[in-house]
Length: 115
Image 1 (tube, rainbow, N blue to C red):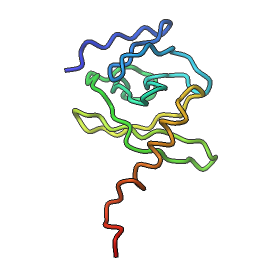
Image 2: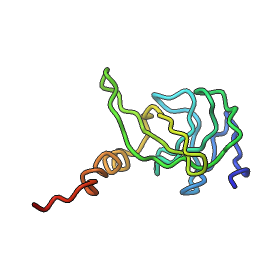
Image 3: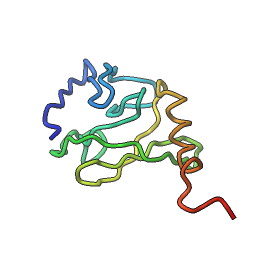
């Protein structure tokens, strides 16, 4: 699964999740590997930017975290091998998708809200 990923640094890529064309370069990122619309990624790196992972599977956005300097990052989990990675938020990432991801724990808490 996932071996049909076509990545051309100068051309960008087509998101395997939502099928939209994604420009490689954007403000705030140097190694784009997530879709700015659906926020899904691909497991392409072992270290940021090296493109050496052989997995190449989809990575689901499972959360966000805020770094000490206030910058947001997306937490991705590989749907095949379970690897966790973080990706800097890019300048063209959908604010609605980011807020939806950030609100996910509030909409589905791990404990009952009724008392």
